[in-house]
Amino acid sequence: RAAAEAKAAEEAAAAEATAAEARRVCRMSWLQQAFDETKKVKSTMDRSGAVPAGFKIIRVDAVSDRAWSDRYMRQLRNVLGSGREMSNLSPKTSRIGAKLVSSVSQDPLKADAEAVLFHGTSPSAVKGILSSGFDRDRCKFGLAGKGFYFAESISKSDEYTQPVDGLRCVLVCQVVTGRAKVCADVFPSVQQRQDLEDSVRKAGAYD
Image (tube, rainbow, N blue to C red; front, top):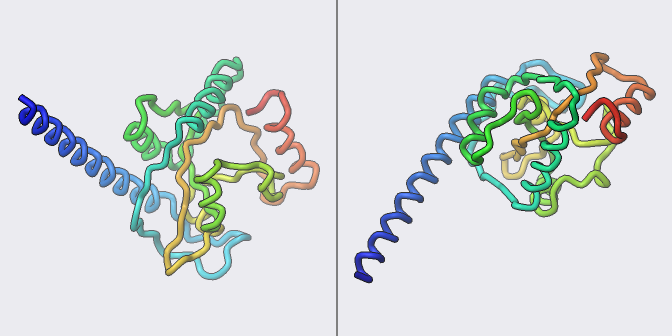
C-alpha cells in the first residue's frame, strides 16, 4: 500500500510539473504575441539610440506574493465598489492580458477596471520591486507627476530598461485602472501634472 501511495504521489507530481511547464510555454507565447502586437517604430522623448526592430522573449518568470495579492484585491474591490463609472481603457494588451491572468489566477481580468501593462526599469529597481513591491517614495517625477508609470507598448517600456549581458528585463503587471483622468497633451503643464498626480493621490472622482 505504501509503495502504491508513493507511486501515485510521484505520478501526481510529474503531472503537475508537466502542466506547469505547459503554462510557462503558453505564457511565453502569449507575451511574445503582446510584444509583436504593441511594438512601435516611432521614437519618443526618452529613447536613447535607435528603436529596436523587434523584441524576443528569452525567459519568463511568474512572480506572486500572498500579501501583494491580498492588497491588490482589496484595492480592486474598493474601486469596483466606489460607484464610479470605470474608464474601460481597452489597452492594446487587453486580449493577451486576459489569457495571462487566467493562467495564474482563478479570478478573470475585469476589463473595465483592470489591465495588464508593461513596466520598464533598471535591473536594480526590478530587484527592489520583486523584494518589497512598488515603493512610491522611490518614484521620480515624470510627465504626469510622481508615481508609477506603465505602458501598453513594449517599445515605450523598453526605453527605461538597461542591458545586462545583452538582455533587458521588463515587468508585466496586472494593474487596477478604475476610472482614469485622461490628459491628451504630449507635454502637460506643471499645473496639469499636479492635477494628474492629485487625481490619484487624493480622494475624488478618479482612481
